[in-house]
Length: 252
Image (cartoon, rainbow, N blue to C red; front, side, top):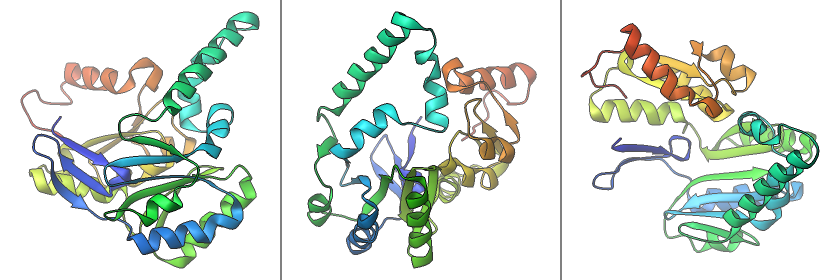
């Protein structure tokens, strides 16, 4: 794999030499406006810029105990069982989660991302927020969409992802295919959440994971096994065995 499509299509990079093929990002001014517009809803923010990821601490307890949607379904196996076994599994997940909260590499846990946005050296790839109140989250999404500067994806009833207007994984995938000379009918995409929906109309074949949200499954050509069962690998192996993918032919 020589390419990375990041931040819902805001950035596409060739990994071998670090050359950027796509850079459609939020300006610092728009990012700060977005932050201020949603502050009345008390969101827990995250943001990606300057090659770094920032997460506000106030989102930690929600992420541990309140996950919904495709990610939660992919994790359910960890919660199977009962009694002491189930408590041990949940406890182990909690320990792993808080170990991930320790700042390392390009990840930073912060009290507020606002100061870091103010100090950003470049434009902002993606912002995201969690608003535990479902009605407030829906209202916040409506507010941003009405503004006209933002592309807003509802990952769940309590979580939003925000990029520059018109920037989606679909536009990123189209740009990548153009850059590497791959025809649309030789592209395959897999998805499980709301930010993957734009891929359905951008690629030749869109496959939903078994743990995907229902609207993603409805948009897909077919459904493969869930993440917990290595669904992508299973699909590729089955397609090769059935002759649906040609060996030696380049796909993206």
